[in-house]
Length: 72
Length: 474
Image (tube, rainbow over all chains, first blue to last red):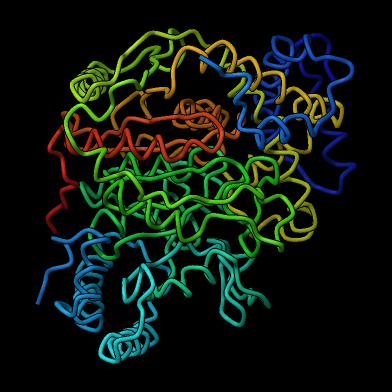
């Protein structure tokens, strides 16, 4: 769908249409802009994730109130 | 008759319990204010006057009979129209759900009922809780009681306006990206978004299962503490609710109001992002609020934070795919029944690859761990503005589904949404007014489940500043 941070709008339209939803050109422009920002954020934040980090680790950390992590 | 505008929720509850005020008289006073304000504010979707009167009469009979009274006995409330009550219409602020009648009752409503609250009706909101301004194409825009030309903030727009105008003593809201804290700030009332999982979401309209929190708005920190004490706690009907016991959030608030009560509390001011490009008037109010906290004994320090701007953007990789999945059948079959802006935002969810969504979900633990280690190891509470700019006018934010939409709306939620990503509790507390006459608020953010400390700091601020929530004049 994208090369680097640039969104391929034709491919994006195809993805949306294949989900059974119609999309106008104006909507597609807005959508592409939003996705560009998300992808830029992902490039910054997602690289350091550990291979072994499961999704539920977040809830365990939250439920444990993060006390060990935040000791002053 | 006591003017409800002069009372806090806790004062009203005490007056009823002690027989100094009849619940029915209080309900009538609120209904009278609603009749005067509703045409201007458009904050109610439905007013259930007769049911409320009946509830109030029953409450008065219980007082007379000397029955033990629960903490909200006879207190008039109203709620964002997204909490289900079996057999009653719940519109979710949407044309699509204009006739929706749920078959079960939200846990939060059951708990408020058990606590003796009287419900006056259902409050306006952004369509399906999507929108931080207070716009609603189907039920009309909620207007800010401080100036009708300005936004209320959203998505709990009616909750903010109704509480601020003194029409009710408190209201439920939901907060997926700031929807309790933003209207609280823009309308000049207190609002709490608790830790993710602290309050059951059973029977509440979902938007994003990973981010949704139920919160409350009221006219004082103590009032919010009482309401949260009633609704918080584990719920077998909501598998995602925390099993941790919910404390009495009012405990210690009287002591918090005494001088020097914040000795030993370290309040952190982030060294980046949250104050970037802040309006000078807003910055002055925030600085003054920190001075009050310092005078109350808190130590104020600068603390490092990571790239929370990127976190703000990344949270869209979670929110919109989850929302789009919920709405997909309607997006296919009834696209014309969404407003332009809501439809445009939902489409984002269809464009996020599944791998990116899952990676964003998986990244939350590491990013929260980093925040706890690098930031909350140096402070107990973060102090940031809810909004970096003065509350905007409705005209300035009337952007429909245009390409500018995500940037303009993104600026409004910039300081609230990261804390939904982290699942952390946030308390919005009014700190004064900017030159346009609209309120502003500080946002106190704590470690997971540290709502008691947020309330303590908020109460210390209220006492130290001498600030009691004032009401707008009609």
